[in-house]
Length: 176
Image (cartoon, rainbow, N blue to C red):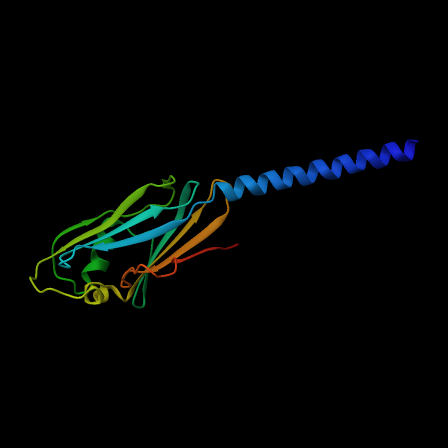
């Protein structure tokens, strides 16, 4: 009789442990962030807008921003550094708005943060590929975490135009 009681107790402990694990995994998956970089241009190609959007269900906490421009790497750049990086692209613009991202910033589900807004001077009509071509050598890497401290990384080339059938950007979980 004592053996049966011990067996039932152990079984209850195993079930309770598994149930806790399953619930934690469920909560983790149901509150996972998914950062995406939206790139938009007006039909004339005179305005380029880059927005960081959280398309996941949970909040994203930015841990590190790295911009790679050619052979140079900038970690957590300020707005003025970001502006200088954009100037190296050779893009001729009249009005520029650049908002740097900072580590520690939280982005809730559905929130959009405008990073870059450029308005071009020239009156030359361009194709969608030509609009983004000056930014081909600029890559944006964003390391971020969920509220459960799961680590993710978004890697985007600023020169790639978004297309309707394009697969989602590289947005993968990584372990340190």
